Amino acid sequence: MRNPWRKLPPSAFVLPEDEVKLKSQKRTIEGNIEFKVLPIPFMGDLRKARVILLLLNPGFSNDGMSDIRMHEHCAKHRCSDYLQRSRNNLLHKHGKRPAFYMLDERFAFFVGFDWWYKNCRPVIEKIGFKRVQNHLACVNFFPYHSARYTHLREMVPSQKYSIDLVKKAMKAKKIIIIMKGAKIWKREMLEDGLERYPELFTAKNPRKSILSPKNLGPKIFEKCCRALDSR
Image: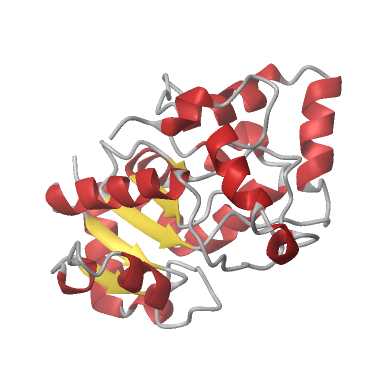
């Protein structure tokens, strides 16, 4: 399946084909979803990653350097690196910098870095930063930001591509961990056999996305660390 994010205009934050579906569900999304920041349907190098995390959608925060202020700051001060990395991620282009760009130390003052670092800290402390930066990836069920997940009655077209990425991860026999939205992911990928996939695991606490022995279980945590640390 071709990557639909190649069609995202340079100054746009919403994929044109998604916008049509979103407008038809305006009452549901109004005030709940933020369209002033770049979407994150996935993050990291999905081809080289050894562990894939499944979540619902990228969050949105007004704490610290909020998501909107972050984008405005980057535009004003010409922080082309972050904005370009964000857009390159949509095209699966990663260069020599960490593929999981939200864990790049250059962006340590951003809200996204803080969130991901806290949730990946147990693994980082065990196997090191670089392994996690380059061998971890995630796929969001819905690509656009919101403070709280809002489920739509109809999927937007780009979600089909995200599901296709998960299907490819299954075919490549990668470890897949559902951190949030287990029922949604399993329902939408019922015919694809996600629920029966032998390398599928689910976090114990759906309200937390921390990769820890407590949330994953000691055996799965160790399995995850071994996969990320393998050469």
